[in-house]
Length: 332
Image (cartoon, rainbow, N blue to C red; front, top):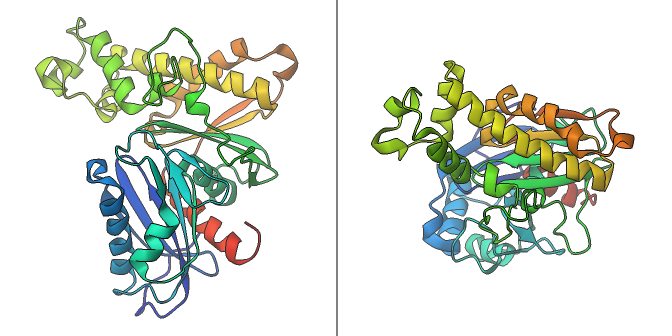
């Protein structure tokens, strides 16, 4: 995807938005599918839905010379379950105060017109972006897992999002891998997110490393590792810290468990891993590749592949824009 220069923003465009638990990314994309301009800002989840959606509209206007007049449609990826009509998100994890929010109506109010606004699960739009712009291009069928503040999942069949009966399919992060395990924020015991979500992963690392004084993380995350982050873990592992490497191998094992269960259910043997934590690359993915066969029935072993989405979080933003373009062309 090429990046075009702006010139007064007189051209028609669509908007792709990735609403994440940490950051929000907004892109203006031309009707030809090429990226025009993008912007990122911190997501302050405590502000609630009204202020966050107002911030998004202001971000769009700031990219488009203060007006949304030339905007033809908006696609937005949000955490949590989205209804079949693609307008409402219900109880997104990690977003306090979002019980049931009709995102389409709220954004339309803010822009002052009945602009098409398509809402979709964030992992679903990441998978759509990967299918058209990233690691998923060669594969018509794949599973997408996003590792970030939470753990998202999506299913691509024939290059389209598989949405299930009501639009909520693909919540791989909330599949249980240990029914006696810790509760994820969704309330599901032993869900993959309760091990691989960033806060859960760093909490595990803190408990594991507090009695291992030789780890460099004791110098980098002070106050009994209270300030440890996944980025610190990654940097320590890159510097050869054996304890940090062990944490990522542990996480990769959990990832392999849930991928194995998904393969057994779907007979889709390509898994693409995205999200911020996927930056750890083979530190996590090699352990997942070693583990996955232990959790897949033998008849489905052939052709299993676990890949990293090299375009990172950009695929969610681009996938949301693709959703808007597909709607305008009648393909959504």
